[in-house]
Image (cartoon, rainbow, N blue to C red; front, side, top):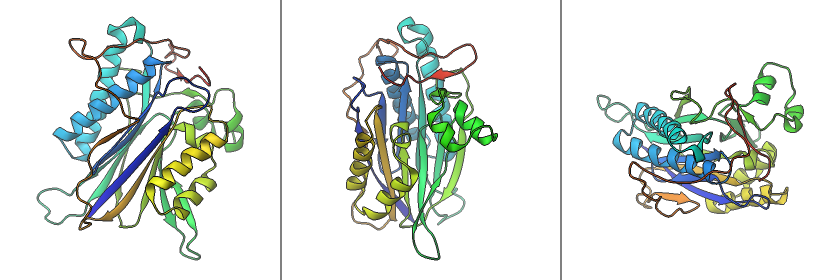
Length: 298
């Protein structure tokens, strides 16, 4: 059997005044949400997504339970944005990985990782190439954005996408519609494998080659996470940046269960009867064409 150990680091960056990213790490659930909606709108959406994800997965710790929790989070965000006009148009990306086990009727079935994604936060896996043991970074997720769809259709090169004026336009986020399509993967686990989840504050600023180098060269996960955040800040820090590193370890490791942690830490959300409260000053919005605009600066 295998287990996971995860750490996360987050920074508001040097331009924005509010951190709309939120991560959760634990011994069986790791996720990053990157809110869109401007100021508190994005923060509320990200918080709602993470809280609903935790609650739903704790009730059903299966791949199906993880997907159901994401759909529940989507509906919660969508409803809140319509109940409170100040939150209209808020949404969030979400990339989550959960350690799930084989069916109960298959004793000893190996653990595997259920991965879900919507938006442009990403998940990567670090592998080693057979010939020279050099690090190979494999991107597992696909961005749900205008420019990434253009790249997949051959209309843009990856280099052109980096500077395209529509690079911040997302085609899918939680809260856009009452029901959304999410991408789902089932990944086998091997001890020694390292995964990375990150918001676009990292992937827009640091090349995949540099990301691979840090993940391969820095053994201690916390140090590697901080190094990646610092690389993004060194490139300008124009966005919130959040990274989570997941190491696959032997289940017999003496470290014990990892307590759940929110990064950055958040105080309890105020009660508003059915749930939460908040205000929004939105620079981008979900439009009639179902595109969510992520502002470059606030």
